[in-house]
Amino acid sequence: MSGIMRDQRPERPPDFERNFPGCPIEVRRALSALRRSLTQAAFDPCDISNAEIVLAEVLNNVVEHSYGGTSGPVDLQVWLDRDGARFLVADAGTPLPGGRPPPAHAGVPCAEPAALPEGGFGWQLIRGLAEEIDYVSYPERNRLRGRIRRRHRPAPP
Amino acid sequence: MQITTRTNGDTLVVQVHESRIDAAVAIQFKDTMRGLIEAAPARLVLDLSRVEFIDSSGLGAIVAVMKLLAPDRSLELAGLTPAVAKVFRLTHMNRVFTIHENPPQARCPSAG
Image (cartoon, rainbow over all chains, first blue to last red):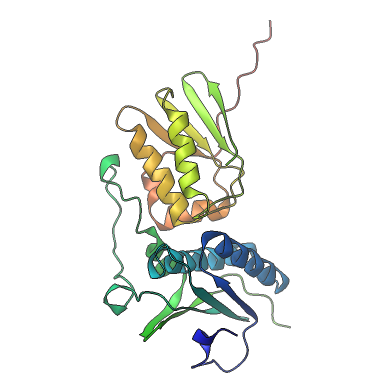
């Protein structure tokens, strides 16, 4: 267990946990392992891709912005239940600007190619697919929590 | 980054043979495409039927390629798998790109 995750543990141990150095290949590995876990937990392919998209963006943000070129530890924890997946991502890098996630920006991008953004899609995807986003920055530790609701729930036992 | 091309009339069809266009390969994808499009015709169709996952970095790279081609040449997309289509929809990029269900078929030699 890495040191940046110790406080504020939720009530039960996570169903999925990975601690890894923040770099794109390690993010890929973690997502691949998560996909296997969700498949084993009988999540629908659509719900699995929602979780993968959200966590890809959250983890990419940590790698690209929080650590910005340097590497550092990333902790990913996921709890699964009938309603979906709760996640917690912690890092020890630079906090989000302003100490909070960027505000949601609505609207359709301009169709003029030169004016199209090449970035900023990450938070759009996180907000589109996750809820209960909660970000806290402590000294030397940032953590983002959220929830991905299951669209295709299994039949009751 | 495995990419193949074929010419179909005045269209260059570019097929990506990778299951993911993500942060780990986005720069490589953009560089490979930049090399390909130098001599490209007016219309490029990017066949994404083998791509199962794309993240915002991959999406940004595709937008960047479109911008490299504009204003004289166009980039269209084809064969989006469900997770890829979802990323385009959620970012409204499905309204920016022309998206075909299937890539253009190779022309059969005419019989007779």
